[in-house]
Amino acid sequence: MSFLKKLKSAFSAPSSSDKRILWLYVQCDKCDEVLRGRVDLYNDLSAQFNESTEGHFCRKVLIGSQRCYRPIEIELTFDKNRKLTDRKIKGGKFVTEADYFVEKSER
Ligand SMILES: [Zn+2]
Figure 1 (cartoon, rainbow, N blue to C red):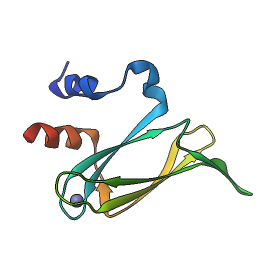
Figure 2: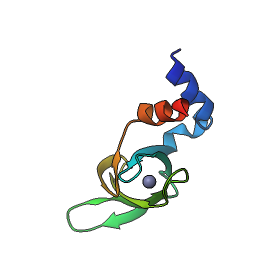
Figure 3: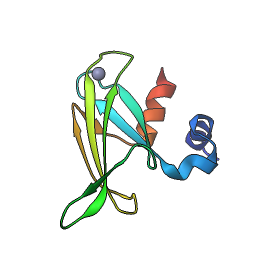
């Protein structure tokens, strides 16, 4: 087991609920803080219907706590099977899970 994986299992919720949780990892444009947000695929999505598509939508705002308090706005689009199909971000950029844990372990 790698170091990152161990770290991940220490932070994650029990595996029974893993499938319905989507973790978002974003980096603030202003202060470079890496933030993590949690989306519950069964509670946080709102249904979205129009003529051509049937799916779900979720809007999240993450605010850093370490350096600046600028909100990072995230918009996620899902298909009807709750699979992520599109994502937009304002005020930051998407990073990987590894970036998040690397930054935490450097502190
Ligand atoms: Zn910031």
